[in-house]
Length: 348
Image 1 (cartoon, rainbow, N blue to C red):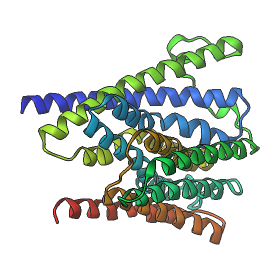
Image 2: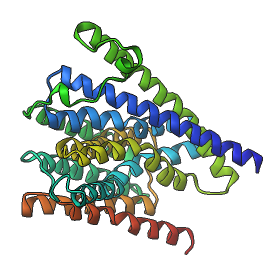
Image 3: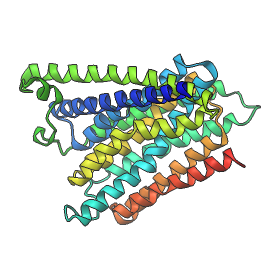
Image 4: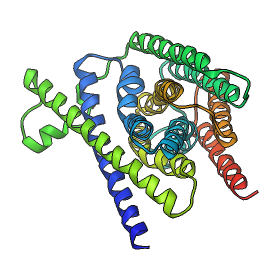
């Protein structure tokens, strides 16, 4: 019992390190986007999205390469698939609640104000990339299929898809102003103004230091998940799929909540949809190349649910040319379906 309590405390400590480091990382990335003159959509869907996606990305990498052979691969695959699923369901639900609360408080309207084609593009790329992950997962369930060549081909294809996505996103206009960025944490800590070349050095130092914190926290997190799954006799995949993505995606949820509250909808939704594109391509590529990628039925179900949730939002955008809080809440309700399937699978 004492060992379990110690593992739980260590798990919480590792999560705190990850979350704090990720917040500092995101703050620096936002300033980097301002200095580079990037558009609001690119800052949200690329820099902020990739920055806040770092914990979810580092955890499966650490699990696959440094975890025990069996549980490490299981945790890695669970974390890889859990991230897009949580983003497409639970993160959308939190965003819908944020818009609803702000609307009821009279701070904003019920509909999101987005740039033309932004959400549609993100969701199209996500559904394309994640459909490929689903295809390889289904093929992996067929014993007579040699997956090595297929997985390598799909991995290269996913990288190309993300490169095309980045290029198209960088073409957007609507540049973000430095006045809209939160104060750089290094400036708060040192009192040194964030200007000129010295400011760029401060931004870079903050980003690198935060990234190191994310990696260290992720390593300890994976270790404690393995210890707890063994001590509690709980499948490592369950902890990886539920605990890891919910906790490590708090930066996306928290940042998006604040941005929705302040009516910065492009940054808020772009932070989520951009992370969905990244998570469905880069981490999935790692899984295809360095794991057996033989997915359990519950993992296949999570992919299907995430795709249905994304398709629902895409349909609403195409039909009404906009998104309201009800759309986000409805998408997030798909998370409940997964929980039901998960526990039915555990206790048939």
